[in-house]
Amino acid sequence: MNISKALKNSYNLLSGISKTYKLDTEVLLAHVLKKKNRLDLFLNTKEELNKEERKKFIDFVNQRISKKPVSKIINRKSFWNFDLDISKKVLIPRPETEVLIEMVTKEINKKKNLNFLDIGCGSGCISISLLEYYKKSFGTGIDISKDAILNTKTNLINYSLTNRIKLLRKNIFIYKTDKKFDLIISNPPYIKLSDYINLDLGIKKYEPKEALIGDNKEGLKFYKEIIKKFRNNIKLNGYLAFEIGDNQFMQINKLLISNGFIVISKYKLINNQIRCLLAKKVKNYTLQ
Image (cartoon, rainbow, N blue to C red; front, side, top):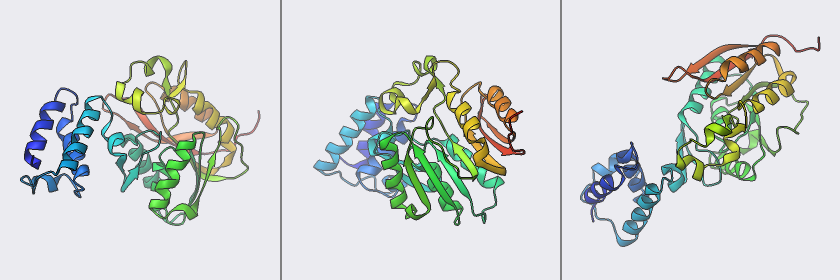
């Protein structure tokens, strides 16, 4: 079986499974054949797959048929300027989180000695992006998940960034610190339990439930905790960056205003839902 036939056969198998069946097939085959990118497949369509490659590719396609996300099959995900390991039980980094990083980099000068806190570091995608962009930065990454801490550490090692960040396995509802940060950034669990039930099977089966569900009601539990607990850990004129869920902006915005922040930037999806926001601390919070 050559590359051309392998692609054609798998397109047919996956066409009813995934809207991106061509992309899925090409990414999987390129990974099996250790090609630099998908274009290399089309430059070598007559190249034959050996027995081991055929077996591995068929296994990958069958995993995709069972709704396993491509990124979880190959344990890799492109994010920002990185090729990240996601072999542990962590969320797959998504494009909206790249937008969150872009919002921060547009607002905060690249030369700043940025001291940041990444709450719920997961795969490490946010911390790694900030450490790479802000060459003089130092970060703290926390997560309750052992897998998340290990996965973040793996990616930090791969990009030689371990010397500028401290990783802590902590429960956000218990963790306290006296440190002051220029930026606190988080993509916390924000899905309501009732909405989780309707998520795609591939998400529910292969991504950690605890990293997705905010609470049983509005999905706002983590935002309330982060804003109220850490409001005084952000320097005056410092920033708070969030990825948020559908129909949550109004309540989060009110909470931010009442705690000394104003939203200076937000990102809307095509359905007009606000998914990312960047807020600036304009006054220190004091008890009334």
